[in-house]
Image (cartoon, rainbow, N blue to C red; front, side, top):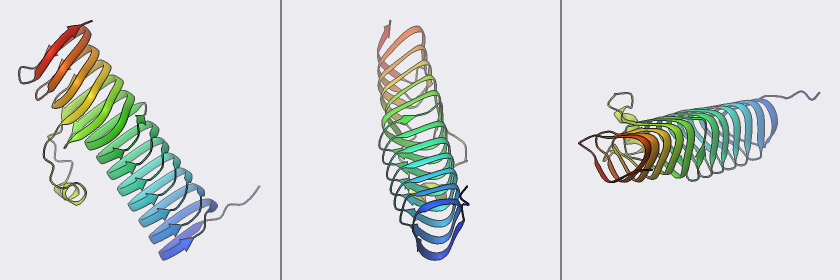
Length: 243
């Protein structure tokens, strides 16, 4: 059995890719080839020029992955960009995390901002802050606390909850550093469809579900429901259809 060795980069250095036990970047490191490791840790700034595969990856600072990412446990404290697609069993992000392809996961927890140019498929999606998903957001459980403007092309799930975040969890420093001053706390989507839909401060063309509650601050063009519908008087629903 081949013995895997560790790589530790301190300061500024380039390293070729390969298969490793443990990879640590402290400072500014660039790895030029594909990387496969049991554990990867970035403290500072790490650039991976090709694909990355790992059981565990932690980014504390800034990370850039120019290929695809496959990892079981992915933690971001800072800013990380994946220029390919991501297959992540568990994603925990505090800061800003972006994928230029699709994102597949079992559980996603984002505090800050999540950006995905493709679609998101997961069992559980929890967001506190904001996100931009240019494709379909599909999950069994979707729990969104809106900190600032959020968008998904379409949203589908079993249980969908969208509420306004009035807490102080998100610091003004984080907002100003990565996103600038937010103009509104609102979710926009073309279609929202679930078994149970409970939303507020949302704009959508169509909301469809068995049990639908439209809370305050919503502007919905059409609601289609099978069992129950309740609309807050401070929201606008142009068309209601029981199917």
